[in-house]
Length: 228
Image 1: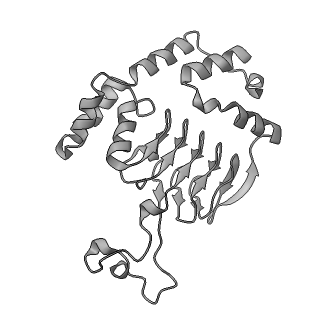
Image 2 (image 1 turned 90 degrees about the vertical axis):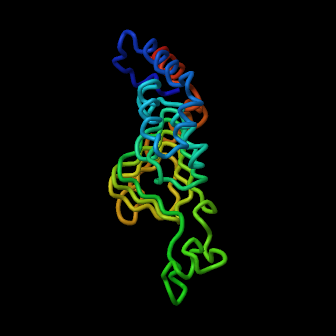
Image 3 (image 1 turned 60 degrees about the vertical axis):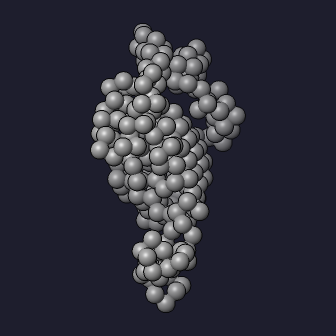
């Protein structure tokens, strides 16, 4: 794998530190932490326990369990940022491993009906009490899938036309994404357009074949360090 071509100034105890972070990432009190979060007035306490006992959001396994069980959102190991904010991602969303996501992320999974004579949600959203059923697909009927090692900048908006963001993709800050994003592409603008593809074709193929994102952080660090 071409990672050997990118040596890093590893700290002497880097792998040992990664092992310790992973060991700490799931507390023996994980079940209690998730239970407390289900009680609204105790949510701040639950999150404080997550961070005190399991480290930052980037590590906490209990926080991921909360998002899965309470919000119906799957967030992979080591992913962090805006995807770990309640209400940002609708139920059914899936975020891969090792993703870096900026703040103020907006994700929309359905639009107002521009082909209908009236745009107001009174005429399509049954939760407002006037309809027996929604006349547009619900958020969960149009889930968003974000691949592995994706970098999403601050203030990005992802609209309903985008159903998939490929592995290794980069979305520039302030972009408005209206369609699917190809793996390893860099996109920017309103609407977002591809600027370039990251890495060479061979490097992209090697990364996909390696499935490195399925490894824990200690395993990955050991692999990269030994290949340098």
